[in-house]
Image (cartoon, rainbow, N blue to C red; front, side, top):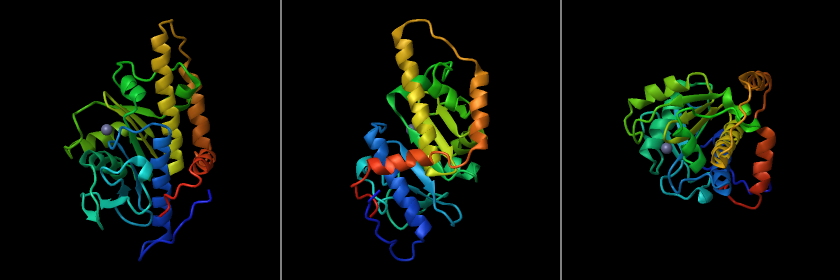
Length: 248
Ligand SMILES: [Zn+2]
């Protein structure tokens, strides 16, 4: 937490700078947890107080090198505000969610091995672990259409997400969408854990015990009654990154 936070440059708002620092931290923590797919996949955050702008990584920058300043700011038409290059599929996916869901301010998208494996299984995420029960109520599905370069897919991505906070992109990976960066990280962490457990459990070859869905429903109800999702976890994230100067 003892990160040297330089003040925002030029006329950038304090809120944008804080969001940039948190999003840079999120990129780095994904690198720590080995949840990256080299330079592919992306995490985004809406710029607070602005209409229709968001932050995405500079295409090609390793996740463990992302800084507050290296993030690229763009609008929903794909215009870069300032400079930088972004991944086109990332633009399609993240703008789709942010346009469809005004309540969402942070979006994650990963291609971890276990999540792609589960996304390729017809039955999707199974109710076989505590981790799965925590996230199952949040999960929707979106069918694969190829690398997301076609902007028409934005409508279907938004429609398939509906009012959920997580989506298994079939044959592709995971997406989480939440009000805050800590909440999006928390859901991503649990969802990816649930996928890893499912693949390990199935590889074990023994018959699996399926848990009743009313447990997942109960967890979902408790989630709705709480606020500040992921904040405790986020404090731990920032401690793990102590000494890394991403806030520059
Ligand atoms: Zn992807």
